[in-house]
Length: 273
Image (cartoon, rainbow, N blue to C red; front, side, top):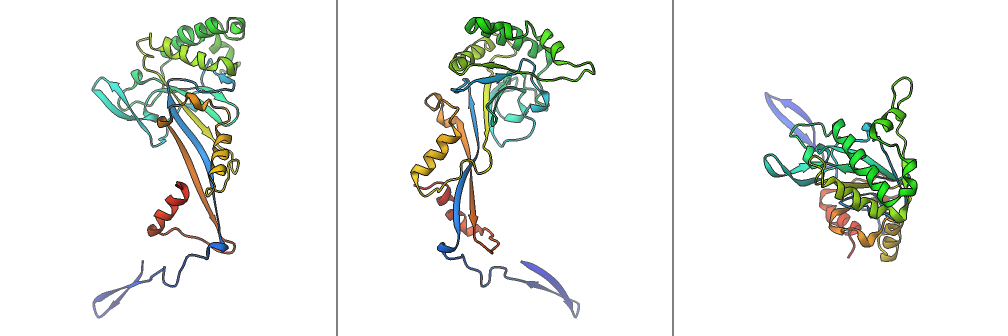
């Protein structure tokens, strides 16, 4: 690396330092390597859960996905089919699963190039009045009284005297959740603006909750099962799900720095055969 410059007799001399000289990887018995599953991200047109889902009649606009998750999907636009980053497609927070997972609903028909990813109020009204509440009335008629009779009433109930919104949720039981998801998508497909809607599921792991020894297949599977304990894995399209795997190397009393030529070793630890 370039460490300095020196000017001698109208000439410039550059001083370089080899930061790697004399450096070597510590002996294998002096450091530890462990893996962790940081997060899970999936795209589907279903709700592959076995636990209850807390659904929001009035979605929190602050929970709209507006920053990149480095994923794109192909959607049909006025310019033809094109690949669009997820956060640029209009979406809402649809529901939350336990404390670590949330599900958003995306509406590709509402996509406009250069837009902010927000869902307009008329579409939100149709989503609740024509999709969500009729679905509850059909599959959970005994529970329909727990839900606001309309989007307008839900919005009014969510506002306090200062006009601030408080986003309340209503639970859909786990043994009805997959039927609920199918019916929501079916009804969305009958609406011009909501047609083609799809879910994006995001599970954020708690720190160290799924730490494991990546060397052993049993440990890898047990930790992944723990991350997926609220999911019906038999009804997940595996090609549409992505796991963020973290690798931690610890050597007491040392500061470690990755080298580019050691990248292959990192991959071997993350993806053991």
